[in-house]
Structures are given as structure tokens and as C-alpha cells.
Image 1 (cartoon, rainbow, N blue to C red):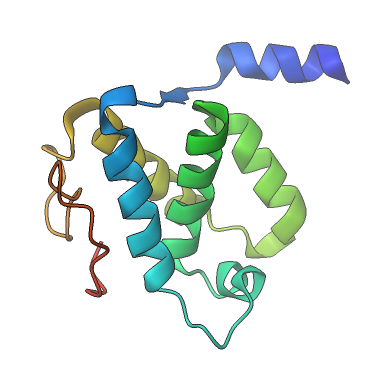
Image 2 (image 1 turned 45 degrees about the horizontal axis):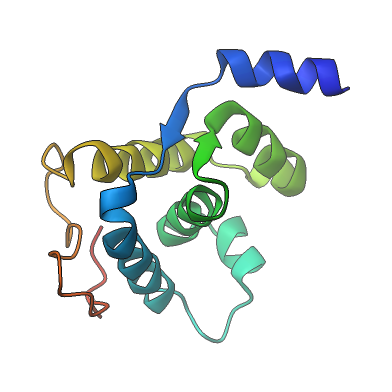
Amino acid sequence: MVEKRDQTNEESPVIVLSKKRTPQLKAKLEEYKGRLDPHKHPDLQLLTHSEAMYKITVLERLLIDGSVQTHVLSSEMAEKLGNNFDVELFDKACAVIEDYCKTGGKNLIGGSGLPKANRFRPSSESST
């Protein structure tokens, strides 16, 4: 099993944490969490295809591990969620988080964007 995981890691696209943007990414995580329905368990929000939950999952892994092996994480989520795993939402979440790391969100259209440096207040907006 370890050999299979290592092989997957070598082939998996990797999102790497941008150290200089870590404070902004932490603030963005809080913003995403603020978009959740406080009356629903986070796992239920994943099941109902909450875009914010996919971004939270990717961003939490990134901030904890320093990188995200996207195929590994998608496999873990697919195993957990079964047929409820939404590949499109997962791929979009990875693309958004990766662009935040690489460019600060310069290639993204719409949404609230990455918080400005030295201004890390979570937004209450419900946009991407």
C-alpha cells in the first residue's frame, strides 16, 4: 500500500504552500469557514456540494502539510463521500487555491479574492 501511495504522489499534481502568502491564506480559510451554514455539520455540507467546503478541505491540507498531493486528497475524499464526491468542485477548489499560491489570485475572475497583505479580516460575502 505504501508503494502505491508513493507512486500516486509522484504522478499527482501538487499545490505548494506559498510561505509569503500564508497569512493571507489563513485569513481566506476563515472567510471560507464563515460561508458555511452554522446549523449543518461540515460533512453534510460536503455532501450537498458546498463549494466552500471543498476549498476549506484543500486549504486546510495545504496549511497543515505545506503541500497538497491533489490525486491523493481526491482519492481520500472520494472514499469518504462515495458517489457524492463532486470532481468538478474539487478541481475548481484546487485551481483557485493553486492560483492564490502562485499569483495571489491574478488569474481568477470574480469572487472576493485573496485578502490584501496586512489586512486579514474575514469577509462575510458569499462569493468565490
